[in-house]
Amino acid sequence: MGAVLLTWSVAASAQQSLEGMLKERVLGNPDATVELIEYSSLTCPHCASFHKETLGQVKKEFIDTGKVKLVYRDFPLDGLALRGAMLARCAPEDRYFAYLETLFHNQDAWTRAADPIGALGQIARLGGMSKERFEACMADEKLGDGILQIRLDGQNAHDIKSTPTFVVRANGEQKKVIAGAQSFAEFEKVLRPLVGGS
Image (cartoon, rainbow, N blue to C red):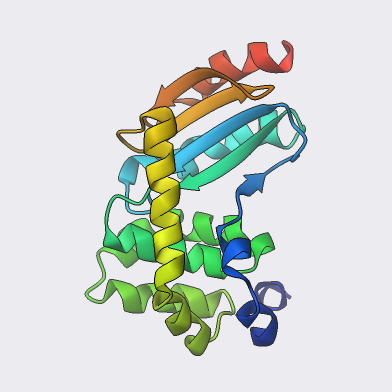
């Protein structure tokens, strides 16, 4: 059954528009008034630490309860991170965060592979993406440029200098910037007062 969940029609994925692929990716209640905007690079070990060790608890306490939404923004630090970001954005929107988690949880394996792009291709195929779709995705210069624009916009809007960096907003107003892979306690300290106590 798991394999069925990961597959999708090649025809449907081929019709994804550039605008659709570059659309903001949100985890949780899209109407939540508290936003945790994450700027991350798929090759950054500290970003992987956040996804492996802290996000689960943040998700359980704040995102799954509908109080906070996580907005993921690409901030690739190198060409390989850009390729990983392109792969995730070529997946159907409802599989986006599953791809991100796979890439972060297996970061050491694909980033240190003798052929990292081949390793990304393997992840794509395990996720149900055809070889042709993966190759088209890797060759999509407009998608790559769009992702780099997301990075540039983050740099300009929030002075992002390193990853991960989290911008916390409530009702559209910036409240705090959390730099680095901090502990759950640090996120709780910032988020709890914004969502109304307990």
